[in-house]
Image 1 (cartoon, rainbow, N blue to C red):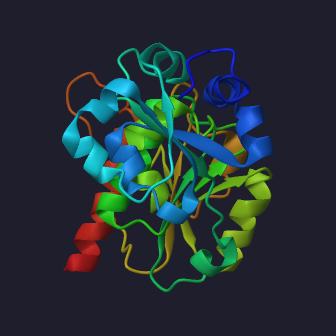
Image 2: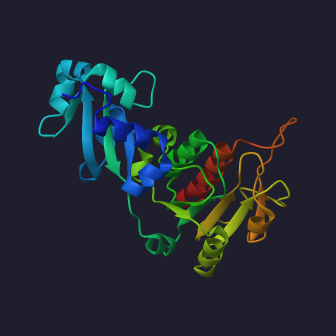
Length: 258
């Protein structure tokens, strides 16, 4: 059992929770809590840690049968965890590696293209909603918040393990590339001249979602095949980015179901 926060393994857990650079260099992220650790593919888990008090519950001990894990004293677990009241279990998980070209060739695929999204909760919610709506993949610009930020991971509620996600360091080049592959791009934009439920999304399509405060850059908007808008009543000027993305993804789902 590890009882000191000075232990090198604990120091590395803290580092992985705080630094995107460390996560990227090691190719791993932290999954905290019972749901996130249980849903992680077993072959992705590199290290598993549980607290003393977690093991005191018989049901928890049963779930861990046949698994290798390290026990941490409760105060060490609290130091290593990102949450204020940790559930007593966390895992070091390998970052998934998806085949980008394979997903963009899918007939009738639907995609989210995210430009510089900054809120971890918004990004995580988009993955969660995307899985529920049947999205094919999510592609983000290099300026988007780190997907493997602990707050983002928690807000995905497990979708991180199932929704293909790519970071495009050259966002413009990637958009040009997918257009050449037959993916029609729609920009959610206030200047849109068509309502979001008017186009036919049953063929390959992608939605461009911009930064929460600034929206899409002019360069990115210029690559859209069509502008669309979500109607709003009252004095509301715009929707939360994750909510707007969810509405669009579910419209694709509705059309394909019909």
